[in-house]
Length: 335
Image 1 (cartoon, rainbow, N blue to C red):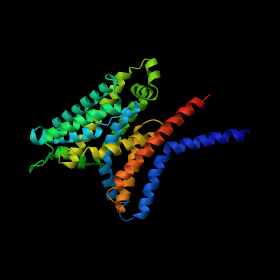
Image 2: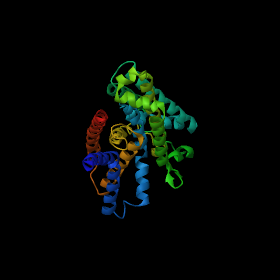
Image 3: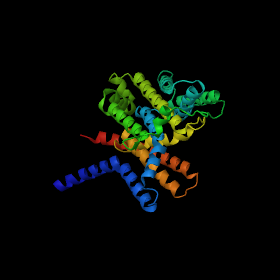
Image 4: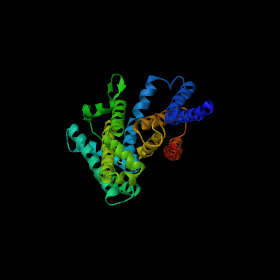
């Protein structure tokens, strides 16, 4: 009888272990496979540095996308905002002659303001988050075209300030600085969501808004706060993109929207299955980065990247829903 009682518990423990760390194991497996197939190029420090550099901005944007997801909302304006804020950074520095720290602070303030507007549209105007943020995103895209006249922004012969470019191309303790940004941002979000009351409120709002209302949580305030946080992170990603590209491209932001949402949704299936979480988002970015880098080094055609992102998004949405239902069922099954 004791053995019979322990067997289901062991199965549940194994299921939780796989559900919590299966995606991390997948990242390790993918890396090992590509390292074996491409031993001369893939497992090298140069390639790892290139992967980190290429996907750091997507990781930052994904962490920003994750914040509204915690509350059960989505911010589709992220890609449009990224495009606007990176060209705004360059316009303020190159055309307006602002010092680069002032330009960066202005961009962060702009991102925060746009995020707050998104939250107000969702909570006060009662517009679905998909529609509201798609509308504001379209407006942001129009503003980007207006301020740039549809043309790229070049810094000219004087180049950009070293302080700005150093935000992206420098290293700290041998690690690319963008990687540290991702880790610090993930740690801050983990602290806020897992260790502070505001994080618990956001998770309650996302899982059961009615229950949150009954216990007196000011839903509107915290949803607006979540969108404002997303906008702030998007502004930061825009500054990093300006430091990386060093050329303003008014249409570049949309390329980052899909992989950022894929990572935010796929991340909700690991570490803390059933709910969006920062470390799960980082693991999801690692899976995407390793997978796409390995595929491209194998000589895949250009259309493989959007195919990979689209298929992964569908898988991520399905797994996120399954994890949420599994978590809810486990909660009802507890004595």
